[in-house]
Image (cartoon, rainbow, N blue to C red; front, side):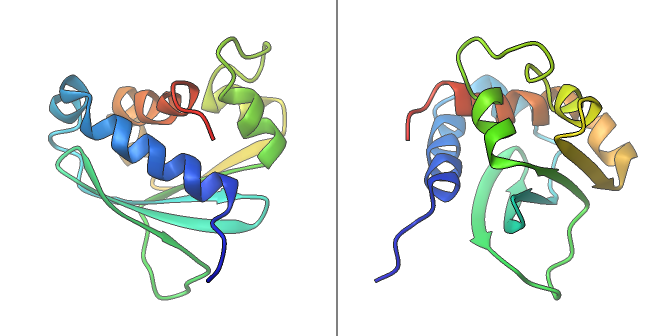
Length: 129
């Protein structure tokens, strides 16, 4: 049996936290997309359906279409998920600005759902690995 990566475990915990946070489901009610989260080259495909995270699949997969991608270094994400992150690590755009991450794909889709996606990513601060 293969052992789950710490990021995979964290994403599963974030999914559980999302299911226990009804206001986020309402906030993402119009969000039904596939998002690629890439951490140090390891891909995770997150399928959202009406504000719920219905599936997480570890890649790589050249056949899985995604709408937008957030790519970051593991150290940067770990810092982002601290209760009180350092300046520059407080936000996904902060990680991009300091050169420790990148956003690709349909930026308009991300911006339209920015509050929801940023709140989902911040759930990683509330869970422990």
